[in-house]
Image (tube, rainbow, N blue to C red; front, side, top):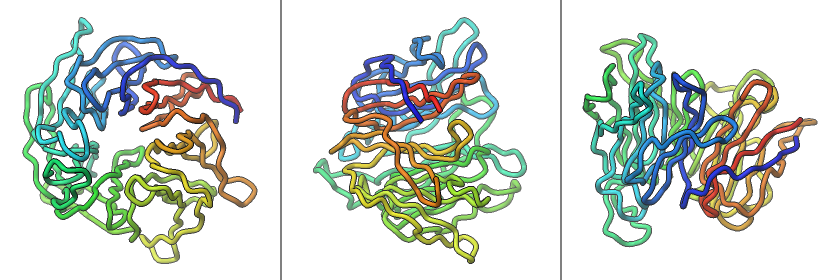
Amino acid sequence: MRYSKRVVATMPKAYAVAAFDGQDARSFVVGVEKDGPIRRFALDGTPLETVAEGPGGVMTIAQVPGRADQLLATSEFFSPNFGADTAGIVCHTRAADGSWSAHRICELPYVHRFGVLTGADGQPWLIACTIKGSCRRVKDDWSAPGAVYVARLGAHLEAETVELTELAGCQLQNHGFWTNPAGTFALVSTAAGVFRYDPPATADGAWSVRCLIVQPTSDVCMADFDGDGTDEILTLSAFHGDTLRVWHETEIEGVYASVWEDPEKRDFLHAVWSGEICGEPCAVIGNRRGGRDLLRVHYADGAYRLEAIDHDRGPANCWVLTDGDVTRIVAANRETDEVALYDVMK
């Protein structure tokens, strides 16, 4: 692949990225880690509007399923070490006149990642992960582990609050989160490993939680890299770590074994996305220290391979967008305050 880069905005500590298919246009949104806005852009990078001027602390953004006018975003998560005691999740709703309003649907200190899953009965569920439980205002205080919370979602999040239930406690360094494209399950990665969460299939059903990998893991995604019909799991480990691995399911369902490890150590691996680019299953990953690279992980000629997209920019998160025949990667290059678009040419 070949890549052509454009910087479309300067946003100090650009962090969270998500696609947003609005009533007016397909687009993407970017939020910042510290004080600052959530901004919306057209697929070609043209600035469209400001979703919210602040307060910032945006770790995750996600479109509400079935709503072309709503986003959910974390708010006031200003640091993993301290400053997230007032964090929560906010619903941002776009009115017909193009204005945006904000409504806090829950208070959840240290909420880091979240997503919306749909059960077999069509019930939407919020699944939200706190990276820790509290902090003594010293660096790297992990004495109070995080947790995984769930809540049923109603149809009017612009005016409702949600009732959270703790599903899994004692989740140390509860950092990584990925949902499959259909939104039917999530992977959560912690210091204990990678866990799969499936929502209830019926109103009175129970959540299914299974451990897939026992390995301290910071971030995670899935793709069928080798084309054998079974998705592999890609992990970045340990917490904010330096090791990239691919795991394949064994002959035992739900049990994964490492099949490839990148021989190069890459400091502070963080950005991760998976899917297809130009019809090829792959992942896009990035690290925030050292080389501060953006890379594509793919499988060719019987081996897992890495391809450089950009260098020395420090991506925190990334996403891949299709615009007709054009494929673009958007990266929130936190360490250089860039929102960058990369046109992909095969």
